[in-house]
Image (cartoon, rainbow, N blue to C red; front, side):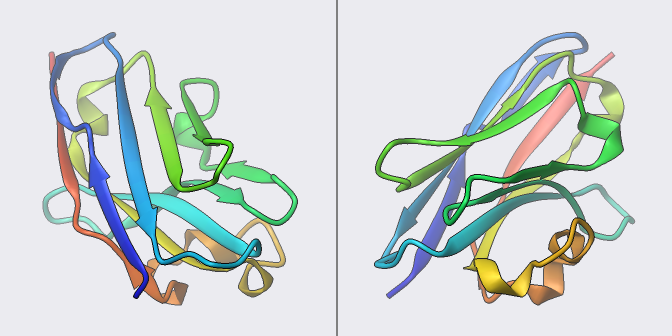
Length: 129
C-alpha cells in the first residue's frame, strides 16, 4: 500500500529556513517521481519542486529557484524540501505527491497536481513578516 506523509512545517520568520520531509512507504520500484506542491488560501495548488528516482532530474518553479532544494535519501524512502530565505508569500499548506516517472516527460507536466496518483496529507508552513 503506497503512502505519503509530509512533515516539518511550522512558524518561521521571514528570511528563516525550514526542512520538510515526505516519508514514502510501499514504494517497491525505482521509477517513481515525487513533487512538492503548496496551496495558499484561495489559491490553486501549485507544483514547486520535482525529483525523479529514475534519473535524478529536478525541476523547480521560478518563484523558489535558488531558495528551495529538493533531495532524497540514499534509500529514496524520504524526499526532502530544504527551504531557505523564506518569504511571507511562501505561507501555504505543503503536500508531497508521487507517481511513475514516465508520466512526466517534460518540464511542465510535473506541475499539475491532478496528474499524480498518490498524495499525502499536508503540512502547514507559516512565514511571518
